[in-house]
Image (cartoon, rainbow, N blue to C red; front, side, top):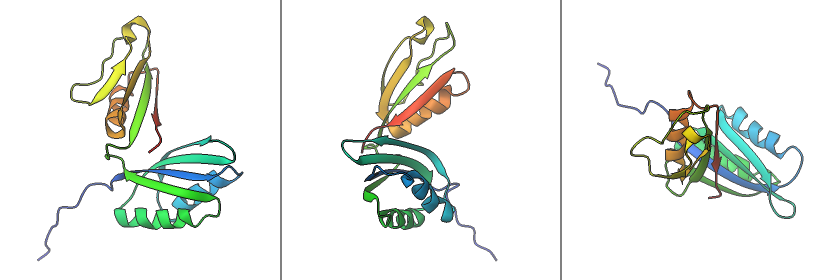
Length: 157
């Protein structure tokens, strides 16, 4: 007889902030680390910091074990200076969203999302929201079918 064990439907989501040297090819090498280990990158953003430093933020889904392997592999890249990884539901992972709605369409974030927000979309204003990444991500999913555009930015961890 086979015993059934309840397993999660999907791997947890992770947010990684990688501080690197600002050099050509760093994002390609980071993507290669994930690709060769069979992990899809959900989103990636990069920016130059002061001097010759850069920051690359990635979101992805994987098991905890595979996440540890990814971190060790990323840390071995010569351009990498530091790696911070947290689960996407960690309240220290903060984000902001900008939502633009069609003219005259009112939108307010769903009840129960712990967000600070402003903007009256019915008057043509952008809705700006800030909070824990998980709440901002739920807001973006809620509005995705109706918004003209929306974007989520993860702040430094």
